[in-house]
Image 1: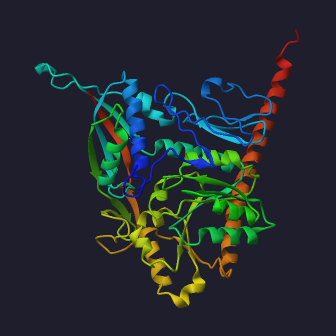
Image 2: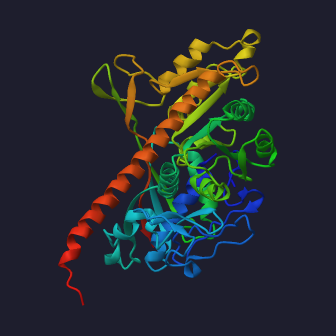
Length: 357
Length: 113
């Protein structure tokens, strides 16, 4: 565990149940063990069905070997297969063996070139999440901020005011308790709580597991509330369309300069609690200027989750994202239909050449 | 800090390679850490020592090679050096910068004993 902030991995809970992180015998990641809503546990790769079963939907594997499939109960599940295949190049890069000091009879040592991104595994899983969400036309956002910026209050407001548009689901990340998921459910959204225990951020694997617990509708909105922390969540792609940073006016207007990585990673900045501006020393123009120093062109909206000021503009921004995600899904479905029709035509043209037995 | 999670990813990569080489003991690990990446080198050292205990990389030497930050400055139309995010172009003072180097966080090589 890190003594700086006490974070670590491996104790994460989703809806109070453990998330497995097991390694194969060869040390390769095999992201498997998890619990389903019905209480059953996913098995290891060895006993997993090798072919799609009736009622089970199997996604095509991507280059990393990671994929999603659907169980007969409607829940989804993703994992990475194979001996280090999530690492892609790992198997093929071992080269450049070198001996040192053998003339003197000193034990030989070898240098092995690896050239691998530290976040490769997270990024591969995030890509799987992104593809899954894209295939379903889900517009997913990763909400990041320091603790106390009003993320959950803003979520509750968003859920209430979004009612009647599209289904909305929430993944809640906190070190402990399900208080936020309870608040979000009470407001009327589908929610799943991830407890990171010692962890200071959500990662793509936690979100992949959380997605198995959510029966997401096509063309819907998914809001992921990250752990309140302006440092660590910046590095971890979850598969979202955008990171949205929330800064409240009760914080310093120079936070974008103090925590540049997070504001750099964001595509939208929400300045929250603007109803308190008369009572605090917060220079809105300066905050925006600082944020755009680290992220040129950053979009900014001013809101108050409490009074509802600016919420209409926030919802309009969400609606634009939702409609883009829906159009992309529909055009890919259309493209797929056209391709199927082409293949059927081709097959029909070939059939007469087959001689009857 | 998230360096704990990153150190665990480093160990996973390193041990995976060591196992493919007959469970060889790892005597040194080289990381490339960009000046504009999400890693604080000293925190990474601390976390690396913590996570490698009891592993094939226990007591391995950690070599961190820091790559400097650079960005494309739009007004200058040129690549300029950038020490940290949020700083202006050292030439023209503009913040219209697109980072082009210094974000890498990679395991570059390991030494097997």
